[in-house]
Length: 198
Image 1: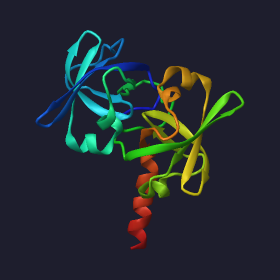
Image 2: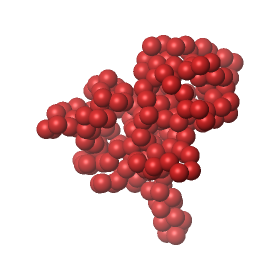
Image 3: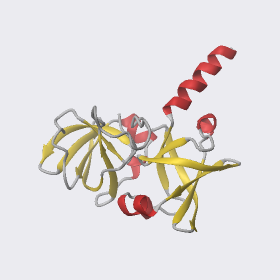
Image 4: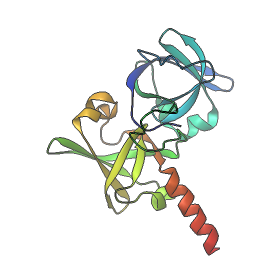
């Protein structure tokens, strides 16, 4: 599990097709000393399993279903990615519960300045309408964010300078696609309500 607090920005150093999907090699700059073969790492919000470690370089095998559902299908060598190592007992829970189970990709529809912050607006995937609520949480490319406004089929978040400086979000522009993971608690509550009303 993760918190959506990005620990560093890494870079894709290779992307190779395999019979079972693709293998990504990511330069993480520094690697948490708890990371071992089989550890989980969130790469732009996608929970992946470490298959090889070489200094700061980590390898991940990405399966077809993950490729289909996430923006990793469009990732290229030298692209930057958000990195978060998995939560350990005793760590601060600074964001919200993020599982790295990306629901879908969504598109940026607007980017505008708002004082010291930047407002990013995204399309709301139809299957996640129930989970996108005012002041609720959402993970965008692995970043824990608070939903500031909902309008029609879009939602907006306000992103402060620290997040702009320490994640890949500042590189994103209108029409770009990002990974979205809706709040897991909202999913569970909605599922329970639906079961009760059937």
